[in-house]
Length: 414
Image (cartoon, rainbow, N blue to C red; front, side, top):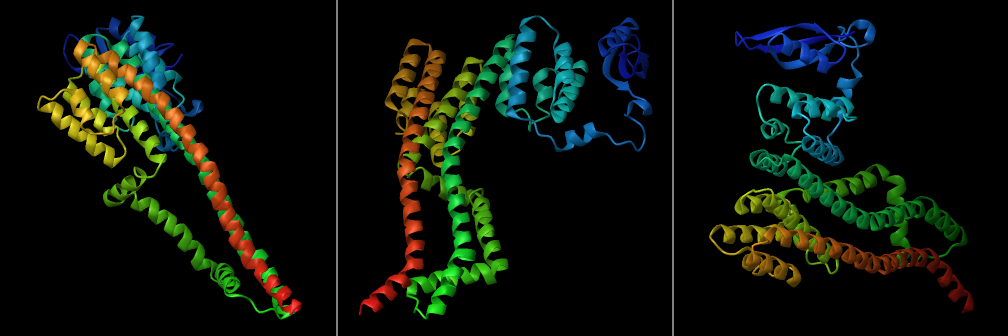
């Protein structure tokens, strides 16, 4: 039977006490402490050296995993859904957290849940305990949890948050899947060009020199590039990869992101995917916050922060300012000029009928369907465009290689 190292509050003396209690499980240890008029604040199992934990100088693999692990949205979704079920079933919050802690596969998330449970046992509420871990739980999550605690509908708000994060993850996955295909094609083209410049073109150049064929300007240019890849590879490859890395870093800076977002929002077809995906995140977040009892102005603040494109975010910030000074949501959205007419109609109708919650949900469902159709259009547009790009690149390289042969045949004909 294991021993448990505990820290508890003595009900009689109001002082903190520490010690060790023997019990089969942590739950049993807590019951023993309560029987001793102690309120458990933290309990940890004491492991001896033979069990592989706690000994001085021993390697703790769990701590190493927790150090490098990250909390994924899938962990938060599962936690939210299961917590909603347990709260709805009347299970105490601390017992529910203990269950999640014992069965959590993510080492870092397990550590977070242990700290959250300790804070609640110390008298704190769930939202404040979760707020100490902003890397795992967003500001929206914290405020919706707080609204659920205040209204007594924590189970409902947990379900709503799980649905919201699931929607956002689906949108993100769809956008990423649309970007994977062209990304793979571009990488393959780069690899093929490197092979041509390093092995294929030098072989043809050697043959042409042996035959005494004069190389045209286009071929000479390609030979120059080939020589750079072969002889100055230590400069060329760092320049290429450094340029890609520098570009990715630049678009994360405020100036770079503004320029990149302006470019993306003006590209045909792609702009539609970006616009609908950002609007879907905005409307769905607004709906979940509003349905959970968060004031509309605060809900708009949270919703604006989910918009990734700076150009669209400026429009949503304008909506937020107008609503704060008393303008109706539907009117403020219509003035941006980027909201689909059907979404405006649904939201305006919801405001008129006093059923804005359902209207926002309906608008979200419509936008999600539109995202699917816009991505299909984007993929259909990309395929011929990529084929054209491949044709131009391959044709240009092939022409530079075979032009000397064409010149030779022309000279032979004369």
